[in-house]
Length: 210
Image 1: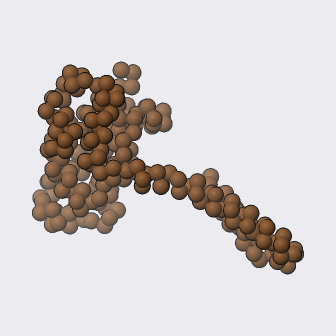
Image 2 (image 1 turned 90 degrees about the vertical axis):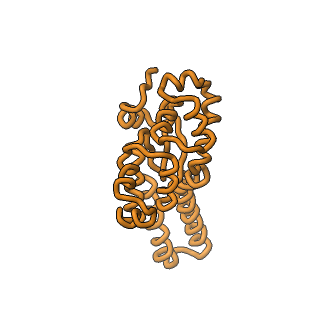
Image 3 (image 1 turned 180 degrees about the vertical axis):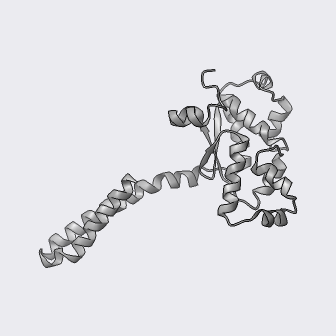
């Protein structure tokens, strides 16, 4: 909003320069003023687009996210024993690393253990229910009805809603769903989140004091 107001004000000044100044000043001064305000506008627009471009360049598909988790586990020095204590077997963890089938709830347990969250299509989520809600919102934004998705996937309504309500489903099902409803991912440490967001939105998911 702050940048939008600045942009609007400078755009108004450019309009004023184009309409009024030619009548009150010489051409050289007119060009200098117009160039100055145009540069300011370009700068403001650029600042607004930096976060958008960053998201576009650094997003991942599911396969890339899974491989990234393997690197993060080593960097964070999270052992298989620690993961087993969180209810994740070595086999499940390796299935995630290798892109084999697993229950998606295990992916969120893994993220919990690493103290990371997923950003999906620009929205940060910390649990499977929120994840499904974002997918449902994306489906609606893309103009897909529940019936249309059922038809394209040859699924029942129950199968679609299992994903959108976070009721438990496998990686294979998620990939099939996102073949229709596109999904881009990113990973974020919970400690890199705004403190209020971390406390208010993920209090039930993470124990920050551990």
